[in-house]
Image 1 (cartoon, rainbow, N blue to C red):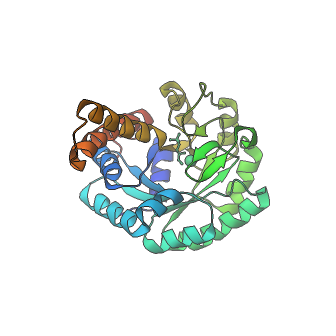
Image 2: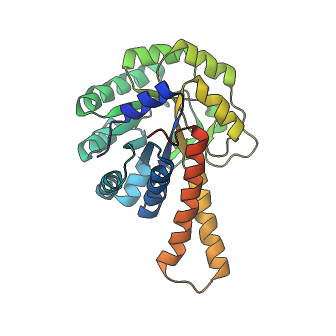
Length: 283
Ligand code: G3H
Ligand code: ZN
């Protein structure tokens, strides 16, 4: 059974580790993540963006996630990643997601609060956790594009007020990460992270975590980061494995022989992240 995302946030906060949240849009990616979680004895968030849902179909995503959760002994939550509309959230709650993110970060502060409150109102009674976003994370995540010049870091005082007024289960913050592949070496604003963690008890979420050094990830977790989102690093492992396979065997036409090694490569990436985030062995 899929578990309420709140359980994972709370356990991670108490245990001082972060749970990996991995984006998926097909069966092989789902299997890679779920097998990694089972082998590492790690809780895990499976997550689908609006683009992922459009690509695979919401019924397939939910059915696969339920099947995956039944098969393993570790707690698994299914999260909507970067939902930008109330209707999208409602659709996911109705179909059986156990966690949702409402990303109102493009809206003015009061409007972000208002839409998040509305989502909390419908999600919590259904046993579904809510993650919101404050501050603007740069880069490209599917159909959400934030130019580096428009990215803004999270204000600690606003974060405290936002968490208090919305009663969200987790808050995604902007402290220097971006979605997609980094051009230069990203540097996290640890002073800001410390100030946010001092101002509010709400579990914090780090987006855009692919390509961030292990050292910075390790440093961020003790300051209340309880969920870490990874998409790009899985995409890179997936596509590189397929390129390598087809370079070596250009005549291969069996999808299983092309996608199988890609699944193995993604699984290794997910396992390494679970160990790095400290969630391995916590289930
Ligand atoms: O919401 C998804 C993540 O924030 C993806 O970040 O592009 O660094 O993997 P990433
Ligand atoms: Zn994100």
